[in-house]
Image (cartoon, rainbow, N blue to C red; front, side):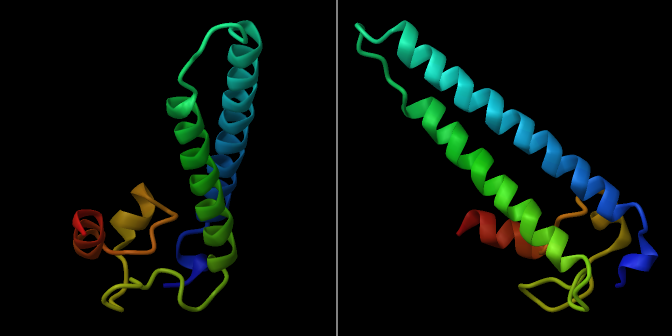
Length: 108
């Protein structure tokens, strides 16, 4: 699989990256605002910090995928080494696993 086979992928990945950056900024501001607003009340910030960490991880995944787009190994499953289907990459351009391996990794 080469990037030339799916020319929209860099654009899709960049859009995803910008969306995640916007979400991360919004979530961080929301946490700061909540902490300021309720500074005299004990609040559980864990759900918000967990969401922020997950968004940071997703953003890091996108950044790695943007680098991988130009790597000859792009489009090859990191689990089984088989090529990822065009359908999978069209739906999930940042995928690094085929659907089967992704299911195995998710259940582990």
